[in-house]
Structures are given as C-alpha cells and as structure tokens.
Image 1 (tube, helix red, strand yellow):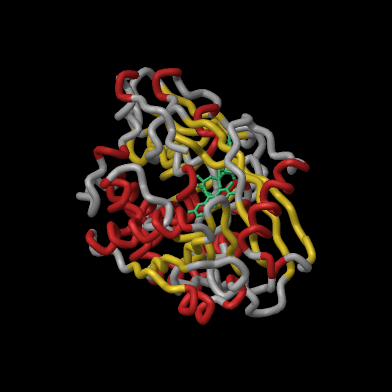
Image 2 (image 1 turned 30 degrees about the horizontal axis):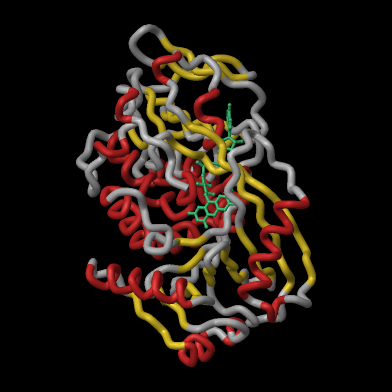
Amino acid sequence: MIAIIGAGLIGLSLAYELTRRGGEVRVFDVGEAGGAASWAGAGMLAPDTEAPPSSAMQRLCALSLDRYPAFVKGVRADSGIDPRLHLDGILHIALTANDSERLRARVAASVAEGIPARWLTRGETVALEPSAAGNVIGAALFKREGHVDNRRLGRALRAACERQGVGISAHCGSIAIESDARRVRGLRTTDGFLAADVVVNAAGAWASMIDGLPEHARVPVHPVKGQMLALAMPRGLVRRALWYSDGYVVPRDDGRLLVGATVEDVGFDVRVTADGVRTLLDAVLRALPALRDLALVETWAGLRPGSADGLPYIGFGALGGYAVATGHFRNGILLAPATATMLADIIEGKACVVEPGPFSPQRLADPGNRMTVPA
Ligand SMILES: Cc1cc2nc3c(=O)[nH]c(=O)nc-3n(C[C@H](O)[C@H](O)[C@H](O)COP(=O)(O)OP(=O)(O)OC[C@H]3O[C@@H](n4cnc5c(N)ncnc54)[C@H](O)[C@@H]3O)c2cc1C
C-alpha cells in the first residue's frame, strides 16, 4: 500500500502511474484535488524556453515533454476528459534590437544542441501570429514546445485515478506521518491509522511542513508566488503561446487568454495585488498592443514549490519507506509524467531512464551543496 500526501498534478500523476502498474494507492489532500499550483499554473510545456538549470534537468524536462502525448492519450481514454494538449511551438517575440540579438543567440545555441528552433523574420512572425504585428521585429520559434490545460488535466487525472480504484481523500483534515527511528509506518488521518509500505510527500510548496516528519527528513521547499490574469479573446486572436521579455500569454480553447506571471518571494500569500495586475497588464500591452480592448475576466495567484537548488526532489528521503516528489518550481506541469515514471521506477527498485542522483532528496544533506534558487 502506497500513501501519497498531496493531490496536485505530481501526486495524481504518480498515483495514476503506480495503479497502472498494479499498485494499491491512496491519496490525501487537505484541499481540492488538482487545486493549488496545479490549478494556478499556465500549463506551458517549455523545456527549451525555461532554460533548465542543469543538463540533468534538461534531460528530465525533454523526456517529460516526449512522454506528454502518450500520457494525455491514456488519461483522456481513462477519464473521458480531454486535457487539450497543443504542441505547436512557443514563439518568443523580439521587440528591441537587444531582444533580437539575445534570441538569435538562443536559437543558434539550441540548434547546436539538436533542439528544434528557428529564427523568424518580422514577416514570418506576423504570418504565423498576426496578433504580434504591433511592435515585433522578429521571433524565435521553439518548435517542439506547447501547452496543456492544467485545470482540465487535474480533473482528468482525478477521474482516471478514481476509475482505476485509487482512493482520493480531498479535504481530508489533518494528517501526520507516523514513523519509528528507521522508517515510516503509515499515516495518522482523521479516520485513524493507515499502515503504508511507502509514504510519498507530494505536498508542493507545503512539503516541508508535513506533521510528524522528523526534522532530518524534511526537504527545503519554499513558496514562490505567481499572479496571473485572463483576458477574453475572440477565437483564434492569439494562436499559440507567446513569450516576450517580461511575460507570456497562453491561449485556452475556451476563449481565455492567460497572461503570466509574477515571480515573488513573499511566503504563503496568495492575494492578487494591484501592483501584480498592473505589472502583468503593462508588460502584455507593451508587447501586444492589439489586446488593449479585451475584457479582463479572471485574476488568481498560486505558489510554486521552490527547491534549494532549482531542481526537484524525486526519490527516497532520509527515512525508510519515505519518498518525496516536490520542488518542481516553474516546471511541475511539464515534469508530471517523467516524475511519475521516475519515482514509480525507484519505488519498484527498477532502473530509471534518467540518472536519478541529481534529483535525490538527500543530495542537500551537506549544506555546502546548497545553492540559491535561480530567478
Ligand atoms: C502562476 C504559475 C504559473 C505556472 N506556470 C507553469 C507552466 O507554465 N508550466 C509548468 O510546467 N509549471 C508551471 N507552474 C508550476 C507548476 O504549477 C507547479 O510546479 C506544479 O503544479 C506543482 O505541482 P504539485 O503537485 O507539486 O503541487 P501543488 O499543485 O501545489 O499540489 C500540492 C498539494 O498538496 C496539498 N497539501 C499541502 N499540504 C498538505 C498536507 N499537510 N496534507 C495533505 N495535502 C497537503 C495541497 O492542498 C495541494 O493540493 C506554474 C505555477 C504558478 C503558480
């Protein structure tokens, strides 16, 4: 029996993978399944855009992107809910000579690494994305990237898990890990004690605060706030995800255009602020003046789980039977399928496709190994 704490995209993807392999899984969440950061995110699948902080992370991100079509196909078939995956590229628009120089260099470096990318002239950019016509002087197209509707993916994963027999306890009240000196024994829930062979901590930005965890088994995770908003756009006005130097837009099939995102180190604060909204609107209207008259239909904020060195924690922690899957920061939606496969392999004692060492929750046991989180 495997108990997972946290029903975000990471916890649910792992539950889905483990039950497909025949495991018995229960998931507990103090809030809504598929809520928190997994609901608040933009859903971009952007390993090339986000420039991962290490080659190990680059490999994990690329592997996860490769897995996405099959992952979504399975979840859609098992749930009847389409998470609306689009892999039609992400366009980085250049508005200044500096942008252009920087992006051309990124394209050249990416192509040298075998990443499918291309520089587009202004004419080519506008033909592909007429909404960018305003101030654009060219663009970098990262061809294999795209986006998924993470809110729909959360609903789909929950339904697919439940159909496969995963017990999901949302709004579960307080839970605590029970352990002896060497290993976890299970979870203390409001319904009593639940024995578990493995307990997985997938509690996102709250992962270091789980009750009952001995101090030495806690991984350093901190919340990084992101505010976003949505505009209502005529169908097809913006066709694909677009980046500009200080933000991005992502179109949804329901006619919303997501505008993101702030990156703020302000603790567990999920208020939408006047300054946050102004920052997002100033940036998007500078880049895409054609959006000026669109209605503002939604604002929200979420907490990215930041790790101490910018890499996620995936693997067994400093206590027998205790595993961790968190710290995915800005890439948790992208990394959900690869995290699930990797941790399921580790739990089953199988070899992983990507070397797991760099992601081990125990890598930071020596404080000298800690670095600051890249912005
Ligand atoms: C504004 C914004 C934009 C983003 N954009 C992108 C993007 O474009 N692409 C991308 O890949 N990533 C993006 N991210 C990052 C991504 O959303 C996260 O990395 C990912 O959702 C983390 O998933 P998770 O399951 O680890 O955490 P969460 O989704 O936060 O889930 C953690 C769960 O644990 C539960 N929990 C907490 N404490 C307890 C407890 N004690 N007991 C039980 N349950 C508990 C919470 O209720 C929550 O449901 C974005 C994030 C934000 C905020």
